[in-house]
Length: 490
Image: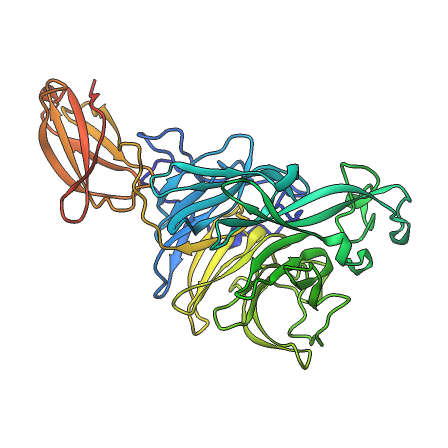
């Protein structure tokens, strides 16, 4: 398909296949994904994102990192119409947790990139400035593999990250071998500038492996789990960490169905929410399973994405907000959001609280994202199917690329030249001025057109006199933001 045609994929295309937690399908044939193509940037072939808006949405662009189904992997920004704003393809690797954060007082783009294994990753964490120049890159601390699930910047110039390590374990209590292998989980705080590990929390030192809900060898797919390094027992599966104003760490572990509040200084667990060792009395409506993305809201409530992947009591995923009473050990359900198509995300997912009081829910392996307003009405749905994204976000962003705009020209055969123009990552362009002439150093303004999606095309008359073209990107006031190289029309 071309860069100016949008193929709408209906909600029926939401493929909810059983998946590992990194979204790698475990069965069935994958559908091929519809992609964009551009004359100016043939290297960019992101998947088509079908966006339907039915109400007022929060400010900002949509951030995701599509994968699977043959989709071009990499960080991707699209606007409210599903038009690409910026893409940076990554070959032979996956990308996760792509979003805007603040570093050194400035908004930056951050993500993880690397190799995905069954439910975890081994890679590096990237920080890029508003000109799309990389300004920092770190791996896991002390040589540990940097995991895909979290890259959380703090106000102190540090990052909270996760790591999975295969370690020996006696798995006889779970029906395994005495000399089995398990995936141990680490939470680290790393100084971004120096790479120094300032904190490391070891899950196996603080949580009993018997708290797991993971079934060692419970079905054919997991029959070898725990017997060797290729299939270690994934008993904990940490997938998010954030800090609060008191310095405590909030950690989510998918395979224990629990959220942990950790004392940063001692590493001790202050309380456990959910699972087999909960310090809170859980009710039917507050019980969650296989969850992701536990975070504090601004008013001190707890937000998370409740996958409810099988086996679990519910048949659909939900984004929930819980009110915890630590003294009484009680929990109340404050908010619940489910997808209009009753998506059950077997893996991945997140729930981002928005500044207008709404929430953007990424449905993980459900291949969609939904924005709800403060009253709970679904005001936007974006469908990636059959591609997926681990997390999805809506965030304000201003991009000013260091690279120049791109231009291409093709003779149309009817005495005209079609000029194509784009600028990967620029958010402020509203118009394009086309320059043309019979020599590279003799260009004059030919026409000015409004920006139309990622790539704008315009036909220029008098092709016999326009042997070379260039374009100028203009903002809403008509100021020149950038100028392309000069290219021949023949």
